[in-house]
Every structure is written in C-alpha cells, then in structure tokens.
Length: 482
Image (cartoon, rainbow, N blue to C red; front, side, top):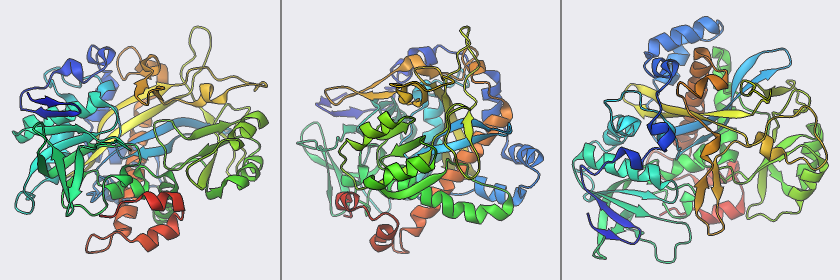
C-alpha cells in the first residue's frame, strides 16, 4: 500500500470493518423492525401506504418509487417527526443531502455481510453508473473527499473489492494550497504517490463544502453525485425549496406531497426581521449553501434575532422557514402550528428533539433505502422560553462540529442507533419509517427533476435558467463550468 500525504492507493482486500463504523454501531444488534423495513418489497410498501392514505394514487406512487435517477443518484434526507395541534402526525423534510453520512452509524443488517450497506451502495448504484464507461473514457477510479474520512475510505476500499481494481483515495479540500486533483480538458487527474498525474474515468466523491467551486459542471469523468445534483438542491437549500414546490404542484392531484416547513426564499438580510415577525417571532434562518449544521439559525427570542443580524455572510440571499418547536412556541403559519413529537421521555421526564436520516440510492428497480439513524438535541425541550435561552441547544440535532483548526468532529453521544437499545426511544413505528422513506424519495426525485431541467439535451448547464432561480452573485461567481 503506497502512501503520500493526503493520497492513498487502495488495493482490493484492504477493507477492515472497525475502521468504518463507530464502535457503538459495529457492536450493536439491529432492531427487528428496522431489519423488517429494509427488506420490505416495494409493492408491499405501496399497498400499505395507500391503505393508510386512501387519497393517494398508487400508480403515481409506484412511478415515483421506481424513478431512475439521472443526476441525483444517492441522497440522505433529514426528517422531523412532528404533529399538529389536532394530533396529525407526519414526517417533515428538512433537507436532502447529496453526500450523506450514515454508514458508520448503521448496525449490520446481516452479520455475514462484513461490508454492510457500503457494499450495497457500490454494487447497486455506483457500479451500474459506470456501465460502458471504459469504451468512452480511459483511466483509473478515485474517491475524493473533504469530510468524513471514516466513510469515504470505506467506500474506497469497497469499490476496490467490487470493481477488482485499485482506487485512488485523495483529499480535496476547499482552498487547498496544492490540490492533488485537477481537470484537464474536462477529465479529472489525480496526483499519484510518485507525483505523476493519473487520468480518472470515474470518481466517487464526498465533497461537502462548496463542491461547485472545484468540480466542474461539465466533466468527462463520471462523478457520483455530479455537481449539478448539488446546485439543483442536494447542497442548495434555495433551489431545493423551489424544486419541492414545483414537484408538489405535479403531485397534488395524486394525493402526494413533500412535507416541508413553510419556506420563504430569496430573502435579503434586511428583510429577515419582517418575516420572523410574521411567523410570530419564531423562525429558522438558513444560509442556503451551508451544510453539516452550519449556517442554520433558530430564532425564538429578539435577542437571538439581534445576534443574527450582527453577523456578516459571504452570500446575499437567505431562506426563512417556520420553526417547529414545542407546542407552546412554534411558528404561526397559515396551515397552523407544528411541533416536535420528540423522544420518549427519559427517567427525568425530559423530551428531546430528534431527527431521522434516511439514506437511499437509485437502482435499476427504483430508489431503495440503504440505511438509517437518528440524532437528538443536546438539551431537552422546555415548555416556556426564558431570556438568554440558546434555542439551538434544544432544536439542533446535527452531530458535526468544526474545530478551531478547521477539522471536523462528531458528537456521537447524541447519536441514536437503530438497534435494540436505542430505537425504542424514538417512539417511531413501521408506518413512520415508510413515511420517512417515501418523503425522502419524493424530495430526491424533485431535485433530480430540477437537475434535469437545468441541463440541456447536450448535457450543458443552463446558466441563464439557474440565475433566474438563484440570482445570488456570490454563489454564481463560485460555479466552475469547465
């Protein structure tokens, strides 16, 4: 195994399970309900969902679930289990990510499958994506990453095994002084251990930070997911909100809908206080192009709004969403209030906010679930907001945090596994899991359709159309076309 700083040449047969799972997940026993859900046939899911939702058109649902994604092939939605004042429960999509984490948090479904759903993802999505590619493009395989090396390296090792060839595993950080990745005439090249530039025919990428400023939209190298999936909604909350809205207009007559918080887009900073006031003083403000819990601000007091308004940002436009909180302090919207179902109360009778990550991927038979896990907030929900309250500690669930040196860490104490020990704390049933899966697929298809709309028949990006959807000069200046 050859090594150079930030570069590793992975050979088949190097996979070691303990390097790619959190210890608590690797040693956990999957909950029977999760195992049952992951093995449910698609027709049984459709039959059950239509039985529980009589107004849903089964043929349309089947069309969505069997969608063959063109650009957004691998996603992971973050969903909140919420209820209304009248007791109507639903899963609400907060976002869908084009580089989702989750493998390292998923107990093995089958003890005999040492590589778990890493292998499932590579075999049923990545490998078919490369079909007939060798005839068009010559070169090696690579995994490039800027975050989550535990999972990114796992994919590299599994790809080497499945494809039976060596894989270049290379870091590619934003603003790296000497990047080890470059594009020549649309083809990705990787700097190898001997400092030679190696052409790459296909790459699995785990780039989460502004991928569009390094990965061109027009590439001869086949990249999963391609950059267009990020700009169309996988890393762009602004366009995602519009994609959901457009797809919902198509779904309405079929009884289906992507559930989202009420969302106001294209909001300039000086307009934000007006929208927060309209929502009753409670709202969520998001920098549309951030991720991993960065750039999200929960507002429940004037003090929190004032602190936000003092901040400086790289971008010009924001989105404002209704805040889902406690039954006593959620945003006021035209459709009423939603609030968190939360975890089952602990021994101190404390309820915590929790979200569910549902990872799925596109296959030859449609979009299927890969793995799932949950995360809870640091502090429990309270009935009344006091002065000085830090609402993010009660509402924020993302485990990622950025260290002072720019590296990333993860607060695994708040990780909720889908195992025999943790799963019951969520208060989630089989129908909730089915709902989470369907909401994930609906949001993924919406983004994939938007991506297809933004590319012409020749595979060229429609910059003018994108600008009409997302006219944020700071973002537009970052986009790398070729």
